[in-house]
Image (cartoon, rainbow, N blue to C red):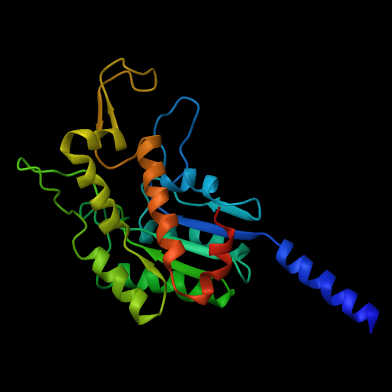
Amino acid sequence: MKYKFLFLVLLSLNIFAQKTTIYLIGDSTMANKVKPDENPERGWGQVLPTFFNDNTIIDNRAVNGRSTKSFIAEKKWEAVFKVLKSGDYVFIQFGHNDEKVADSLRYTNPHTAYRYNLIRFVKEAREKGAIPILFSSVARRNFNEQGVLIGSHGEYTMEARLVAQDYKVPFIDMEYFSELLETSYGPEKSKQLHLYFKAGEIPYYPEAKEDNTHFSLKGATEIAKIAVNQIKLLENPLVERLQKAIK
């Protein structure tokens, strides 16, 4: 009896010692950037590890320029699916490149291909016992002359929300919360969240740079904070272990 009790104690300690892996799949707003010592651009997934303890592995598979369609076609999802295991998480955030109507390799209709690609990610993650979480795309810094932030994601955010509802997937509306972030900074100060540099200001960008989609370190960190704070609020037993992993 004593040895059985000891075995159970050791087994429970081993279970809690196991590391949780979070796979990130998405586009450039989430992806790791090359030459981080020189490059001022950051994806929010790139800074996400700083918000988790050592028992959590952030495996960022997001890639610049990818849509749900190209991510699948290039077998990047297949590579994630092969290594998924029970208890892992998959953070899913696509939309920016699914919207590109002039690119047949990336464009998806939000109500057909985009929807069914998201459903595929969800179903196949669950097949492996992994836990999917859907994120809407982050807002672009797109202020009009009156200082109003204009949305650019059309029906994609709504479709992601509907997939989440239909398949009972945790959903984090990053478009909404990033809109609040952008507007709180305002049309001018919000440039700090993005990539605004004069010609020659930094070596990495010899020419002037004005990028309203991608993030500076400050911007990526603020977006990551939004994601983490919303994860903490999820009332879902599937994310209980994840919440405990957050510092």
